[in-house]
Length: 171
Image (cartoon, rainbow, N blue to C red; front, side, top):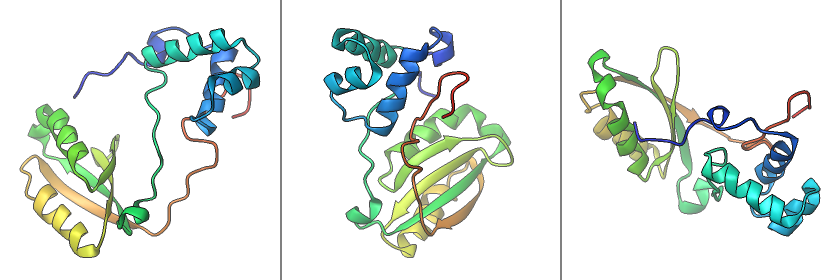
């Protein structure tokens, strides 16, 4: 699989200021540094340095626009569970990279349990979804099987994306 920054716990412990910064950014990643510093109660220069350190250490993995797939004509969403062939463990990174490049794929999750991956997809129609599963997943020799679940509605928990709380504080 592609190299990633060290997990946050391997870098340095987060203190209450880091947790406060992350809470605010988790609910509004577009906030200005000035407003973020005011809400957290630190100097702007301190806030900027903290955010830079959190990004460089891999704690903050990125900033993203949450785009409604329906606005792009992708009215049908599904979660597809993928089970790999036992011999396919060596190609997991290649599979994730390939899936991530597909326009239908919104997210790829490596999971524990009976399945190896959950893939969140959005397509314009059931025909497109069927073609994606039949032509791109079920024909892949590394994939032992798939199970597709349609998503009728998705509601992102308000202010919880990437949410964190300091130890001993409610999230």
